Image (cartoon, rainbow, N blue to C red; front, side, top):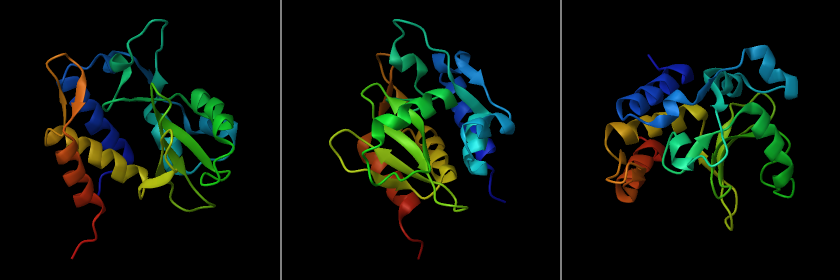
Length: 181
């Protein structure tokens, strides 16, 4: 049986706890489903994402690595996500139905993007690059992140920061996104 998005997110949080990541103590409790619709209708999977945790506690002078759930990226609160949308109004690839989920310190994003009742896809928004579909859905994104921790594509470096083994990440990404024979 396939895991739900919440179960996959809980697996991701388990890895963060096992690795002693400071972010686990900074995760904000999730929102009830009715709170996510306050900013307009969102697909069930997007509501489920913000129901897991509504971002992280942020304080002045905080080291971004302390709030990262994957190397370089921290989860956004729903209010932060809604507030970021106007900065990307000129991106024709996004359309009207999208919300940022994860953000880097440089402003790169992973965002849910949907049309009508379709399952949201995950797009990568990176400075200087065209916006592109990165994952077919939120579950696939989180499954890859969990697999990256499980298979050491994501690890804690000697300096205490989350690191990525780019070759192993690419291999795991290809395994996830390649058509099955």
